[in-house]
Length: 122
Image 1 (cartoon, rainbow, N blue to C red):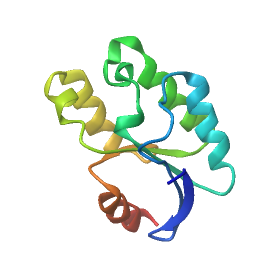
Image 2: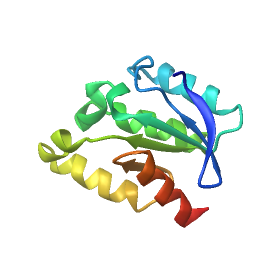
Image 3: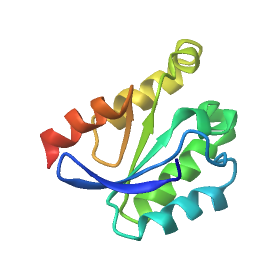
Image 4: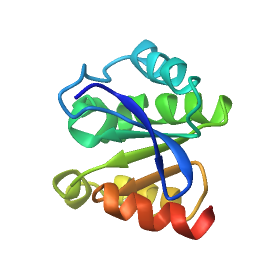
């Protein structure tokens, strides 16, 4: 499966293939943003595609990636189990909690959880 734009809960979402290229640089994030300009409002990236540095907040990689999506007015959704990262970092746990209470970046367990979340804001 390739990255595809599909309607989910009435919202156009770029659903990224779990086997797609890793998001390891800011340019990789910009490439996803460019792909989203084909009509998506939301970019759903599997957690498995994110470089480990994304979950180590001291690297600032997560902040840089998230800011790019905010600047382009696209919602970024990290999809998948990140419990192993959250368990080891109170800062990441706080970021996830804060992000999930905002409208720009969400962390969800799976695409069904994304659909539920989109249904509450659509």
